[in-house]
Image (cartoon, rainbow, N blue to C red):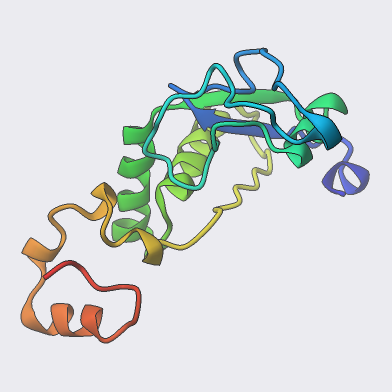
Length: 161
């Protein structure tokens, strides 16, 4: 859709640096009906939750087969955490590790872009489901009583007691 409206659009995919399923160039083993038959050999555990299960989903395989992207860029998990925290602290954008990683890749794209370029960075989710993950380690230590009470008033957003 984007390319139909703006043919100059470049689509950049991001994936965990230590689990480059697409970047590896290795095909996903598939069984009957196109379902993944096994874990992808390039998969390794990584902290970017929500990204890259241990296989290439069929919908992504279709995009790969049709060359619907221009580039794939690896991003380390810690970089995603760094930018997720920075987005929350500096911009009030509450996203997860995948959102931070996506933003980190968008920054890399922006560094190389021509002046006046338009860059769309789609953040995949919010940060609420990551409250008990390493993304927010130590946050509760910095919270005052009112902030802790507010955190505990929202289902699914509580920091561990």
